[in-house]
Image (cartoon, rainbow, N blue to C red; front, side):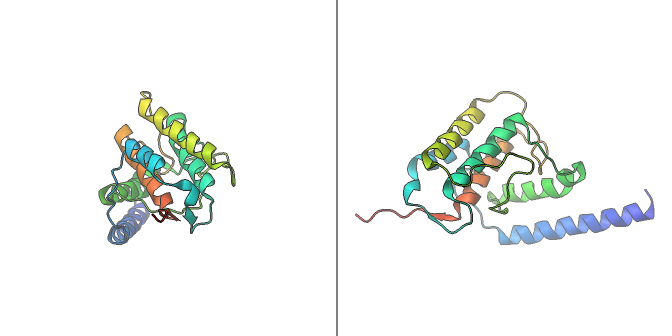
Length: 180
């Protein structure tokens, strides 16, 4: 290893540690179980028809996006970060998210290279697509494909990732309960 590679590696490593440390301090722990069944339970109990959105994507688009992520974990993401990114920044980010049981990411960023999901669509169809994707994931016994940013994940890690992804997106919505 020459001096330039060493310095570049040192700077990159220091940056990753600094960012992950700041992220660690700023992410609150999640109390919702990080399971596919936990997400399915939320799909059954939340009143999506009365949701109040504080984000830029409508609810149906968010649900299609979450379904797409689950589907691509089984079929393959069309575009990936570099191996270096996945082994350093991606792996560190996933470790921090897993430890805190909470993900934080841009809520209006599409999955790189994936077909665009409907801008606004039928909420019932979006809910059905997500539920079908989650049930298919539970039944899936093949080789899961590497995540575009985190790299290779086990089925349990993917279950956590999909749950945290869904929960992070749901943070932009409020679900008021009707007055009794």
